[in-house]
Image (cartoon, rainbow, N blue to C red; front, side, top):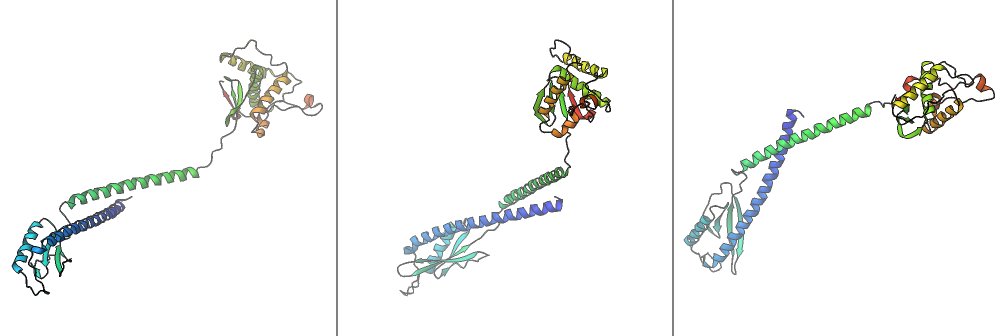
Length: 315
């Protein structure tokens, strides 16, 4: 909000607040004047029997001087009030209006109707109003600043929201997580799904992944010996388990029972990849299919795996 707009809002709020204040003050003053007039009428009604008023019906001219003196004494008592009595029937003090409102009220007696003329001063401005004006001006300014702050905060929020909505969705790569400390397999997008692995299949699988990443074109046949490099990697992970504090009685022989080891790995992957079956072609050691395929064509190597497809905790 620029200075010109801030000034305009402050002026608008100040004008509305001042108008509301003056209108309420005017209504309160009018109500107060009505109460004073009612008291004056009651006072005159009590004094009527002692007032020598003119009476056309009785052809009585009345005592003009006495009525004039009564009006003067009455107005002396009302000197602090915004109301004066100018006329009772045909007797008048001939007071100047000076912008005052003239109002006529009537009192009825048994033989006549007595007219009373009041002069009412309506004060739109008092000296004490200057403090109210200063307070309203300060209120209007503070309210404008508050509104500016709210507006600025809202615009920032909407801009940030729009910016966030326009940001491209970042696709988090789903990958296999192997935790050596807990000896479990998991998927990084769902930590609730886990599958435990024994020492031998866990170490062999880690070695198989690392070996295939470094040798993507290698063929690993179950009827042939496990490569020495693969065995060394498996032993390396086995020693890592001991360093992590796992109690292990004997170092496993990674060349024996290869089919059983691979089956345990596949079973654990089946549990972990239950919601991501498309990832099996990356992490799943292929099975042999068809008669004679194991001896001639089958390879349990992970030909599609890459280094960033795996996350190892505790390595």
